[in-house]
Length: 199
Ligand code: GAR
Image (cartoon, rainbow, N blue to C red; front, top):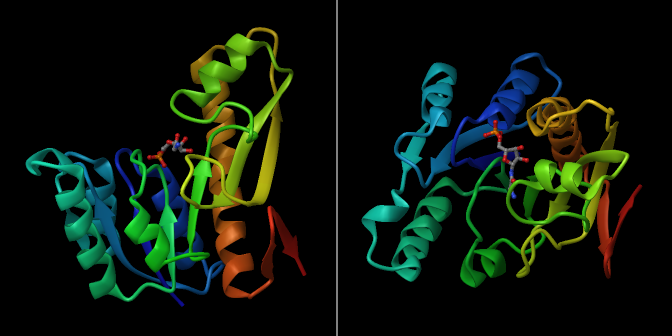
């Protein structure tokens, strides 16, 4: 199975996928990494792993629409079976979602539907929840709202800072994302309305 990763920054989730492939825990071929950010550290990670990296600099485009046209073209060239948003910090356009319906997954650092959007870990801490975590979900037209594949939780400690909580959630993200990719290629996921049934 061919996967393409979209990442905007540090790329630790991308690295976790690379590591899972290299240790034989994930039988997929990562055929490309695409980033909207020319200074993303994910580019370095791709280079080190021998994975082709494509930079489509969002800020070099006059409009989001034009950016999306090139992004879709780059995706099509790579012929992905699955598109993985691993710290991709933009909302995907309708055309791309339509083209890869049911074949795009995203990792988000909260137990959705709580705390969608940016700084989810800080939102969780500020709200005062006692349990936080991460979610892998299919991507639909709404932000952080598609059918949920997997969630992993962490207990919020009394003395947690947003950074400490983020670090613990990130460890769970790395596990959850690889697990979700595996369930996808094992064809164990069926979307029934809002629910993802795991067989
Ligand atoms: C991760 O925590 C990921 O869940 C989050 O950005 C971080 C990227 O880290 N994504 C979102 O918030 C998307 N809504 P990484 O670049 O080290 O994988």
